[in-house]
Image: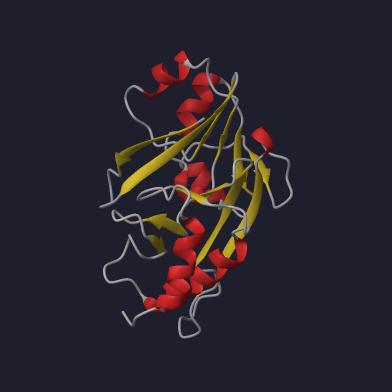
Length: 212
């Protein structure tokens, strides 16, 4: 079973989304936004086995929940140490592509370069996409569903209008990373695309990327 919950970001004009994967007595949560009743609800399920973050920007309620349930937090190897320190996450398990994660989950790195005209050596976006055994992909910021259940790629959904060069660059990486048999997108923002991801990718390929 897969569950999702959401809450408004207290600092920005978008929605934070978390996902819970339940398999018999195993519960794993991904990018968990904190809500008042979340610890109680998770305790009803028997607690959690692990917390997995797709990016250091999605620490959210990870520190509190990890301490409350005494469970490990898995963080991408490229996460910024300073960001984790500010979030109170000092004892974490770093993972890379190929790392064996709880629940049979495996990770694929999504690294989007800056546009050529932007003088910055750091990548525009660098996170992990998580591939679940149930033909679903969990993404942090690189992709989400719109309210109309269409595919958006970063910075769509965050910036209005979105920079078309960044959108196209992010789409190329996302399209390359998504396995052909994955049909569902579980996103850290926006809506999920359940069973329609491959169709939405084809639509974006044929529709092009209008100038911002």
